[in-house]
Length: 158
Image 1 (cartoon, rainbow, N blue to C red):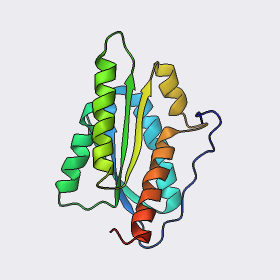
Image 2: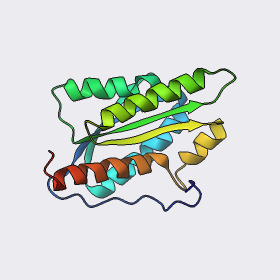
Image 3: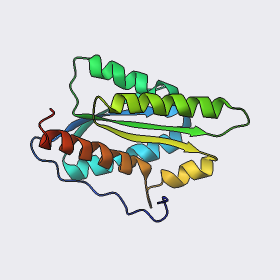
Image 4: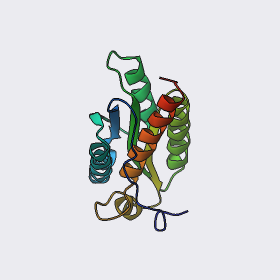
């Protein structure tokens, strides 16, 4: 399924207390990340969830920041990782994407995570996936995190 034919994400209903999430934003592409954040926050508000945001340098640091947050005193029911990596002329793109995605998968095996890390060929692709007037990958990541929180609650894993 591609972004163009995917259903628009909707706010899932979560049993119990309103979930509290941390949105971790790799702000290298500020305009794209702001669009993803708007989508995620809109969906979280619709679901009745609360959230905090944390800005970090880039996509490579996303899993590290979430792991630090997991060790911190603040408690979160889940996390949303937002970032963007645009293909360039070197293999740097491949290394960053592989390590960032691998790190996010490692974190997600321990805790609910919505992955909103865009890996795109052009800034135009990133802008299309972070726009307010259509399918927004930030909203999709928020829906995924909420659904995982719901699964954990239903199965008594929290």
